[in-house]
Amino acid sequence: MKILIVHAHPEPRSLNGALKDLAVSTLEAAGHEVRVSDLYAMNWKAVVDAADYGPHASSPLQVARDSGRAFDAGALTADVRAEQDKLLWADTIIFQFPLWWYSMPAILKGWVDRVFTFHFAYGVGEHSDVRYGDRYGEGTLAGRRALLSVTVGGRESHYAARGINGPIDDLLFPIQHGILYYPGIEVLPPFVLYGVDRMTDEDYPDVAKAWKQRLLTLESTDPIPFRPQNFGDYDIPSLQLKPGLEPAGRTGFGLHVRG
Amino acid sequence: MKILIVHAHPEPRSLNGALKDLAVSTLEAAGHEVRVSDLYAMNWKAVVDAADYGPHASSPLQVARDSGRAFDAGALTADVRAEQDKLLWADTIIFQFPLWWYSMPAILKGWVDRVFTFHFAYGVGEHSDVRYGDRYGEGTLAGRRALLSVTVGGRESHYAARGINGPIDDLLFPIQHGILYYPGIEVLPPFVLYGVDRMTDEDYPDVAKAWKQRLLTLESTDPIPFRPQNFGDYDIPSLQLKPGLEPAGRTGFGLHVRG
Image 1 (cartoon, helix red, strand yellow):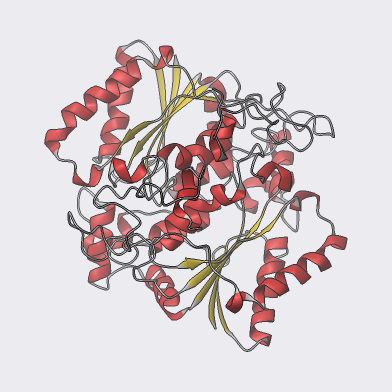
Image 2: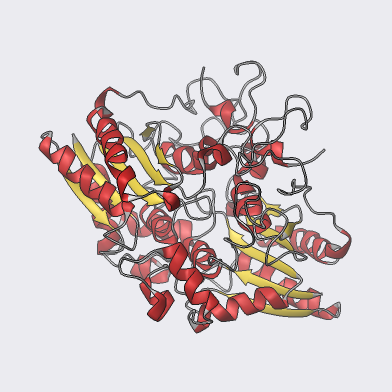
């Protein structure tokens, strides 16, 4: 495999840092090629602004249109082009981050905001009354697979089906479906560690063992069966799920998962 | 009212900028006090790092613990302290932002990550086997109300109950419940504009009228009836919703809304 690890934690000696290092060593030892985007180490610019689009920035700025113009012209900034190139090189992408306020750290959101430009990650394919783009299962990054590796401070029960924070699958849906599946990436079930605020050094060997196990079985793991947009499950142009396709009682985000 | 507007768009002459300006003028004309945190204009630092905690940053850095130590000592950076002071001053908080990749722009997520520190927004109150903190309806920011004003590029049907992007209420749940209700803020139903990528100048008067109407009825608008954590609806310490409290068929994030 060709694996890109996108890592977002400010402390190299953190649990997240250890999991990232373990992923690199485990995957390289298994014969895979690994590249790492360590966003804090790279001093990644987190904020979208006109400087991202150089001469293609309009006045007033139009983020979607201008990012597409700059992309088409090969004129995005070097840091963004390098990340797009890494995504095109990779067949597998691992995101390593702590869940902060039920989502990604800002530096990682800023990686998405800046790298996933118009014409690269969205606004791809025909947009008309009969087709609304190549997205959700199709798109620039089709054929790739991704995995979220997430550390969570709270207890697992708080993230269960009836847990007060909401189910972890639903909290991660805007990332797994809305960000990754959108430009065509298949998403493997996440690797989530709970209660990390109370974890001790003695807990680490079991954690490391579980993570290595996931890493060494990536190729045989089935992705989450999200429904592709353009293969009959959705009405066009409303893009609402057709009646009766879901299992009885399924609602919300779960509608967009088959079976 | 004392209203804080937190604004996150890079272009002052954008729809988001216009809605922010209209909120300021409308609310001030109605006799309210308004303060604005225009994150792009402030060149807001989006990324949590050791510099945020000064001498209270441990080595290795521990984000939660160190942010709480710096908060307790009154030693957070001046930009973060100013935002915490504005939140304590306000009784109403409006967030104006475009939905980018089904969440907030990175600069706004970075405002949350940096301002909502341990002991200020979380880690407040008793944490034991019989109580898991003052949160979800209680906490430092209890007594305040918030409103998300969000612009969305896609069509409304794509965000409906069966829409391919997922229901807008569920997409906003990690913000409305996970970020705002968590430290005690009551959350009003959001003001969402869809299809803004295809909006023209001719559409703006109707948009402005609807926004002014929402602004002038803030005080009489009922919040989303999220379930408070510590008033009997949840088992402790699992913090799972007790059986049978929800309407038949309700699942997922909706479990945490009463009625």
